[in-house]
Figure (cartoon, rainbow, N blue to C red):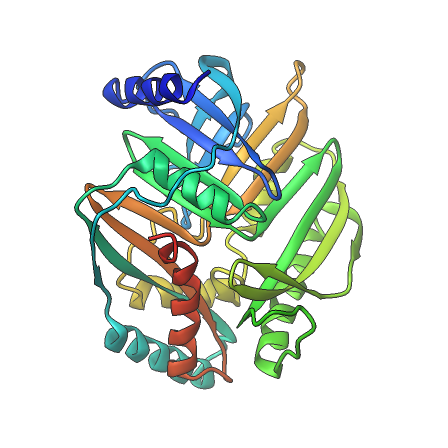
Length: 353
């Protein structure tokens, strides 16, 4: 399919308000497309259907799925494009309000059982001209090491992302997950020192995953933490592997146990979620949720799953874009440093502009 034919295919989907997703896995130079053949909104709470799922931060809200069996599949080579899909931009953000929220969280951590809470914020950018597919091409070309995507659904609108973090990957009964936390700017090398705040934050995520996975996995093993690069940032990552236990609804139960992890919510989970719901004025929607593919065989047994955390993402609302970011607040946090961390994360997609 030529570039013009592909553009026409996308135009047809949009005109008919039919869902589609374009996505490129980690370290790939090609992308896959899934075009739903109707405008009907399909949802899943059991995660037992073949397709591409788009789940919110709060799983009590709808998770959408583009089902495999009513969709057209295609794979394309990622084209090289110029970053010329906009002509001007206006940025809006609120540093004062977010720093005030961070200070409130730090105080709460010292006064309650809360150990860590992840606070999210957004940055609004307004465009005079914007080409969504050109935007996806630019993101995918800029961040080939990440999981990049463009999701469109009449119920959600356009979302884009360049996620550095896998949530869970399953092949047969083999499961792989990562604990990702800690952030610092990339300054030309991976051999860096990590302060106690970041190492403690990464340990919290790892410990949580070990504890929450014990009921669902056997033969659990952990790698040593290592530094990984994601665009202009560095993070600490530990890989966890094991085998998924047998039983009904095992993927659903695993996902409910996993999500949201301390990397996007906090710990203890219940206290962190309560603080977020009571104090965070931002509606996260699908930011810090998860997305990706689920495959089952003809007998209905789970065959494979590849889900990533929806980080470094943005939402289009007309010609406005909301870029989302969050930071983990602990008793070693300062409002200024945490604000700067979210600025660095937002810069991942903002730099495309």
